Length: 614
Image 1 (cartoon, helix red, strand yellow):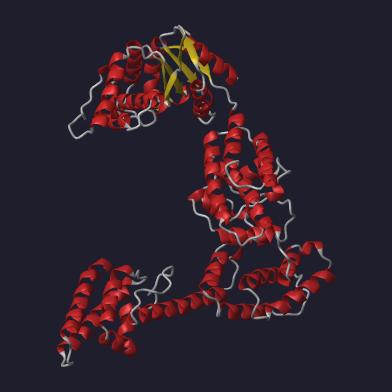
Image 2 (tube, one colour):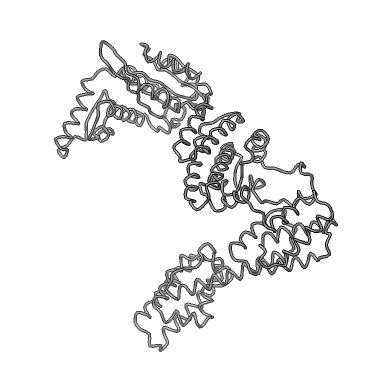
């Protein structure tokens, strides 16, 4: 169909038709790509002859998207013609660019920026441009492409736009091709458009949906610019065809968004030079397929946040499913329903390489990629060497396939690992989930106490660092862990408070030792204790503060930059701190003048900033 459009455009260009030509088609079907890469590139590559004189048609592409006034449109057309002129006859000093904004329509040429500061060479270039346009009355070889007619700003009327087009046709005798999607012209402008169309546009063609061909070419072109192994490139091109066969509709904006995201993903993967080639290639394959599916889901308005597809993430255990048949229905998000319907169930040939994880989802949603998390999921999915804990966890998860003897053996092996302090907290929590459910359903086949298991888990929590603790807190927020005993949640909260206190002390020690806020900035400090209270009650801190002007300045600097979890608490102890400093300054302490000045400045700054904490 698009070949027919190409022939129709060529026939229009060869004709004596004095009106405009329209290409109409839906958004996302590849109109702009077709115009720029088929029609305009073909025009540029074609030499013509008339009266024994060789010449070329000169295309000028202008998008109407966001045009806010008719003057702005005229300026864009003007600059487009100047740019085309520059390509046609050359403009080594870029004078066409320099004076472009000063031109009115070419037919009313003015050069307001001509002044004595220009060099002689520049002056000659300006004169050449002026003479060319003033002496050249024939613009019939210029072709003005006006794209995105439906995207002009609301305050620009159709009458103004079509008046501008008619002016071009009358004064320049040039060809005008309008690209549009009539269905998206606003209701307020539809009536005017229909009335003016027959006066300004003579012929119109409908752009057909050959978007699969255009999308395939777009992906092929961008993939071949990357340094992909030959077999990986061929694999991606093959899977592209499968993807498109399964898609009911190809939207080129989605394809462009997907390829932009994949190229960003590729650049990050390329930095992982310490990984084996097989790991890198698997990352690229899974990333390519999964990013396509996630991007399309996002563009459909179904992917709102990571929770939309969380059930598909690797390693997510839904304990509600442990005692269900594998095909039992469960509540699924619209995103998961769309993915399963359009890809998981209809494209079995590549589901092996699909992987949905939080890293890829965040890349599609927010543009940031945690490559280490993604590599972890890739290794776990495709390169895992099962250790003892993984094997046991897998057997527990699939316990319904075991005999009583096999399940009892698995439970005994799991219990032996529970008592090992080196066992990961996440594994222990998941195993505790299984054991609790086993007990509730009378299939805990070994003689152990679930309460004792909980005690082991509490001991493990008591030695966790920030990363493991944050992960554990994220896990237990899932609905499947609502059953957890209050004591476990209390243990996690207690451990967090302990780590927070340690972090608070590290901050103060850094400040007093000359390092400005060197502690972990990802943790909000002073949520349980007051910054000023710690300085007051700890004599060692107090002495260090008074003995060092650097420490005083560091405390002063950090007042506004360190966030505080409990500002009411800070206000209370800030007043006590000021009183203690003032007492010290007024006392006979043989203070140096600089030290006294610094302490006074500190109390003044605290008084100023207290109002921000109210």
